[in-house]
Image (cartoon, rainbow, N blue to C red; front, side):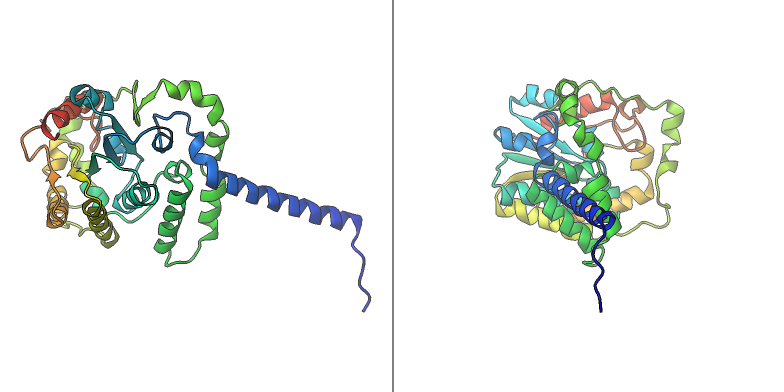
Amino acid sequence: MKIMPMTNSFRALLLSFIICVILLLSFIYVKYQYSFVLTPSCHYGFKCFFEQSPPDILFIGSSHTGQGYAPKVIEDKLKKSVYVLAYNGLDAVFMKDVLETLIISYGLSFKKIIIEAYPFNAVSQVLLKDTRLFNESPPELKKKIWHTLNRQDNGHVNFEKTYELWVLSDSISLFFAPFLFPLWRHSVYHGAYVHKQTPVLSLQEFEHIAKRIPFDAENVPALNQAQIAAYVSICDILKQYRISAEFIEVPIPRPVYDHPATMGIQKQLKQLIRAQGLNYFDPVEAGLFDHKNPNYFADWNHLSSLGRINFSAMIAETRF
């Protein structure tokens, strides 16, 4: 059988395809290895852990932690360095990956770690809700997050999700990162926004805020099994490396806090943490934070700027 020679147009098409594949793989490699250094300030993301000594106190959690703690307030009271590592929706499963990487893989040591105890994340499915966590992570952590995501798909690689995560997610932000450096340097401090002012709830909003709770009063969900395993692993790591640590619940408004679903989930989470031999601190239960004041809350589960300052001052005065 006679083999037809390749036409010039086919050669050009094949060469274009090969070049595109090489460029795509090169982009993925560079993103995997170096995207975490493109965060525009050592006051944000993971960059600080590799450019300076680890902070004395690390706060880790979701947006509730990000909007819950003011590092400067705590530092001024304690005269110790503080860093807030927070990403939207960061749950126990991914907090475990982060702490494993920082403590075990990179050998970082902290005098104390404060882990967010947010009841609603403890019953949620394992989802990467904030792709910045992946793209701002050092290579070793990216690998762990990737394996965690694959486990949720029973070990099978979802190629559509893979492309979205490795190629599309945050790529534009990373590309423009060098141009954003001057802006970011002055807007964040040790992981937290400096100039961000969150509004407060009106009295009417406050009284009806419990309707935002995604669970019925009669049907209290059980803790997610993957989240349970992650909480246990976190506790094991902290005890194995003898790191002083505490789980702290960032306050939520009284109507949400008093809701049967919240109380039921919270009870399960407290029992789980305390059974591992670690402390679970609930500032409302301890009578150290006024969760009945609408001015302290921005929405149904986040503190306002005023609440953040008052909560941070109380934590500095009572937990160290």
